Image (tube, rainbow, N blue to C red):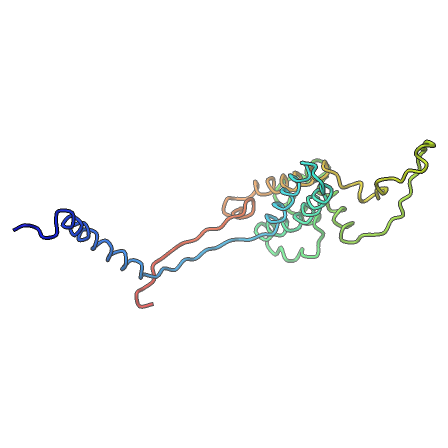
Length: 220
């Protein structure tokens, strides 16, 4: 008998018939539930160093506001020291909580010596010590009377200075100091983590997480 639907309609029906079991199977699969578990060992030093690095890049471009970016880079690099020391110390040294009241540099020195590193005047430790002092100046700022003297010409006598004189604190905030601050803390992190086993250093040198997915029992 002639096909009342035509060849095209018949091919469409056959195609639908071939796809139908797969479609039903997909619908059945989509009704299953799974349990996904994700774990991340978070330490703030990753966030602080990321902000410091991004601020350094902006400061090096010398765009308007570069001074603020350099300030941010130095400050957040300084804050990352204790965060890094606490994260590594919690893994590497038993009863690390007993050293909670120690200064950031004392914690870092304890860690370095415990892991067989020489903590002294060489880099990155010398910059780390400078950063600790800078952090204290930010946390406990003190006023300063800034006085400057210079010889000017007759033509300059009625001109007003375009910029105020810098304080001792402000003179520390340079692009070069921002660069060496970030690099010192980053290098210290690499040196300390290199002394740890891969299992202990997981999540300390770089931020990351892992997870697993398992099917749930249909009764659940």
